[in-house]
Each structure stands twice: as structure tokens, then as C-alpha cells.
Image (cartoon, rainbow, N blue to C red; front, top):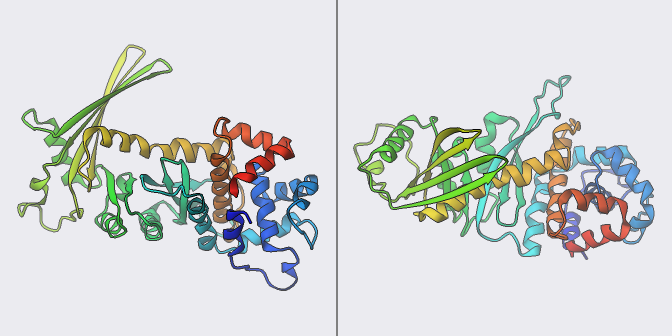
Length: 371
């Protein structure tokens, strides 16, 4: 039995009566396989099932025949999104690839999921992304951008963070979030911006002070597309001055603070040079080179997840809007992407999806990675 099928088979079936004519696992298997092969909607799932019936009858019983697009739509509208989201982590655990490392958390708005008739704005989803394996390990809906902080805490509370470094942008630079990460056994690294104005001003002043003595510095250089970027990474483990009694009344301190960091980026393009400085707080006293790797790793959630979902899976134009449909189909796309990541690493995601759609033999080789 395929490990991912085992996790899918444990999902509670939300359907009743005659609506259960098709086995839950059959419907989910067809939808996931179709998504891997390039399908983008419930209508696509039904069309793909009809065109590739021989492929599915190799490993599915299909006692109710082939599901219609209404069957797919109804199931994803009703399916428990929390239970379905757990399949992301269960799949990686079965592969032994969840592991420790940098876990980036970030939100993404499904832009076409709004429903004007129901007065509902576009769905905002928070994802946890294992940057080393480049796989999604969890997802929780935030409703909208304003509730992303609470959704991230809900998501982190579901994960075993032992040995992991959790990274997040300035929105997540919150005492309660930092405390939760440490309770779950991990460390945190958050961007520091003007939403914490006092700390941002003082940390910026410390790094700009010519008399400051940092604990390490590491420089990297990237050159592509006519642009040269030099990044200087500086860290300091002397944070006692940020924890002393002289601090400002009512200030929400971040528990476990052990390091402050700065990334100074100098970009030269077309003969013009610009410099930008970003500041960070962390609970791990990292050396400068590890800090540089962690900061760079965080951006993989944008380049290796959000961008791929938009470009390869056309997620930004997905129009499913009703009930739990948008969230569950977002989980389905991440499951498909995780499967594609494990198969044939020498081929791009785009090529693997095309070849899976063209060839039953290639599709079987990809599906075989889920054993």
C-alpha cells in the first residue's frame, strides 16, 4: 500500500447516503494524480479520469465508475481541511524527510477565491515550508492577511519543531509566537522592522555605531542578469543591553533572545548602486555564516513554493470559491508538488508534469515515489 494512500485513507468521509457511491480514496487518488499530470480544476479531474481510465483501473477498483466533476467539487467543498492538511506532514514522515532544519512560515492569498455574492474576501493561507527538502509540511487557513499571526501559531502548534530553526517575516516577530516555537522545541529567527519601532531603532543604531564590536561577519556575492549584489552579514551575541531593567515599560520582549543580526545588501545595476539594511532577532546564537544561510533559506518559500504554485500550477487564477474548496485544493496542489519533488530530481517540475500527462509509464514512475 502506498504510504500517501494510507494517510488519505484515514480521512473521515464527509459524504452521506448515495453520495458515497464512489470510494473516498478513489476520488482523492484520481484528483491527486490528475493534479500531478497538469489538471487545475474539478472539471479537469473528471476529464482526465475519462481519458486515462485504463491507467486508474490498473490500481483502483472504481465500483461506482468514474466520478463526475460535481462529485469532485462536492467532496472538496465538504472535506475537513484540517484533517486533509495533516496529509502533508504524514507524507514526509513516511518518507523520512520531514527532519530538522530551517522551517519558513509565510502566508499567501489565493487571489481568485473571493466570493462577492457571499461577501467573502480572498482566502489567505499560511504554510510551513521545510527549506532543505523544499517541501510543504503544513498549512492552515488565515481567512485574511490580518489573521495570519494567529493562523501561524495554530500551524506551529501542530508541528514537532525539535532541532528546527523557524524563520518568519516581521509580521511574526511576536513574543507569543517566539514562546510557542521554543515550547515546541525549536529556535526562531524573525525579521525586525518598524512594527517594533523601539527595538528596530536601537538595533539599527547599534550596527551603525563605529565602536560596536560584532561577533562575526560573512560576505557573499551574487552576479546575474547584469546585477551584482554583495551581502554583508553581521551578528552580535551581546544582547544583555536589550534585556536589562532600563528597558521601556510595557515592552513585549521576545523570550530566549540570544542574537541580533544585520544583512547589508549593496546592489549595482546599470552603473547605479543602492544599499539596503535589514535587521533580525534570533533565539539561537548563530555564527555569521550560519545566519547568512538561514536568511537565504527563508526566501525559498517564495521561490520554491509560492512562485512554483503560481507559475506551474496557475494557483493565482484558481476560481474555486465555495465552502472548504479553496483551502482543500490548495492542500492538494502542495501534496502534488511534494510528490513531484521526490521524483526524478534531474527534471524540472514543469517537465515532470508535462511528461506525466503525456505518458502513462512516466506517470507511474512518479507515482511510484509515494511507496
